[in-house]
Image 1 (spheres, helix red, strand yellow):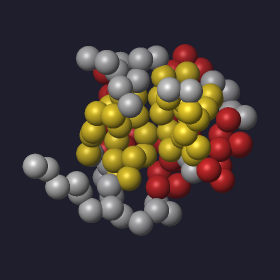
Image 2 (cartoon, helix red, strand yellow):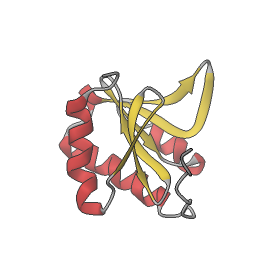
Image 3 (cartoon, rainbow, N blue to C red):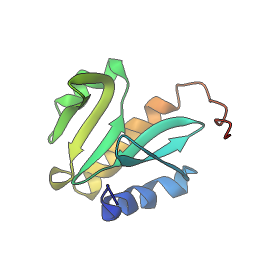
Length: 114
């Protein structure tokens, strides 16, 4: 298992009542999808949140937040949040930010599997 199951369960607890129940493994983490769009995820010791480019600066000013970078390339609109700096109240706030942003996106059709 490449991600922290306890962190994933923390997200599930907040997301399931919101109707977010699709999980996909991506970025080495488990990510949660709503209407075909990635909302957030859990990795080893950190959470991933989709906040949108326009919200990135404010999100990065919050405690424990760092830009999402893969192979040296920063992914605009996504932030990692150190789980050690994210209590239950803060986690709910991050989930609300991510759900709020994803609600502005058009729904995507589920990918067709071969």
